[in-house]
Length: 327
Image 1 (cartoon, one colour):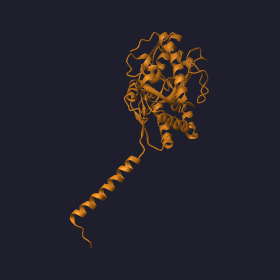
Image 2 (image 1 turned 90 degrees about the vertical axis):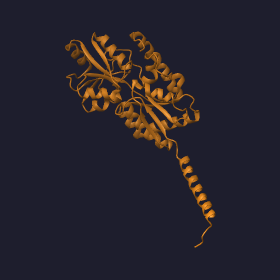
Image 3 (image 1 turned 30 degrees about the horizontal axis):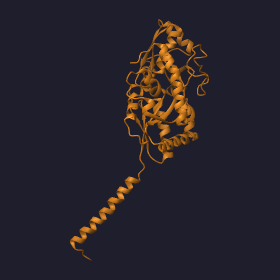
Image 4 (image 1 turned 120 degrees about the vertical axis):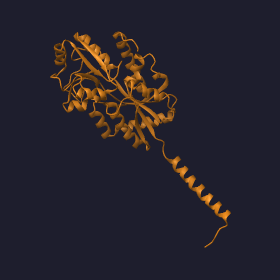
């Protein structure tokens, strides 16, 4: 056995450890950075489910972890503020529908962000419609039957909505006005707790998106009785539109999109947009989203921005005409 002098042994040990440390550092650096997708609503709701479907496939396309992080509260306002505060490196995204991006800034005095200045659209991937549904504990089978039923209750009732100052709230107001009813929009912290109360027959009706309602509608636990939009939905073709029922003005359909902090490099935005486009082209992903009541369609950053502007123009007038004052 050869015995090295103590100083030589120390140098050899140091060299080995340096090589090992370099290897560890190399492995750490070689790991692709993860991407988090912020969702402004609790787990269990439609937006959360959509985000998880998309994130799973984006992860495969990007070759790096993509995780969903729920920052529920204030109709998505908390998640939007978190996006604004995040680094513009393409590793923090916000998956949102129209409410947080378009409606909330119009109905809130100080939302804490400016969508046009603080965010940049990455891509859109679907449109959808809102709907009114009744709980299984009511005898109601259709929209007109619901209106008659409320009249039998003295013309008063509560209708759940996922967030205050939202499209569902203005829809409830229009339904009440059109039919001479005293309907109160009861706000929840997202669709999941609202749905729990509907399934428990704690509230007779609710307005939310088709993705929020569709699973329980198909199971017969609640009944969707009318939908927004200019045409009936493929996922529930027997349900009429509000326009068919005499309530016009709710034909403009909302959208789902992914947003990044302003200043995110274009190359990174393009890479993310490509991963979204590829993800929704996968038949399994498209089928899952379609089954949830979404109309799947890819929108580039520019197309999503244009859709948001058109949607904002329509709803700015509806909100103004309603007399709603920003809170």
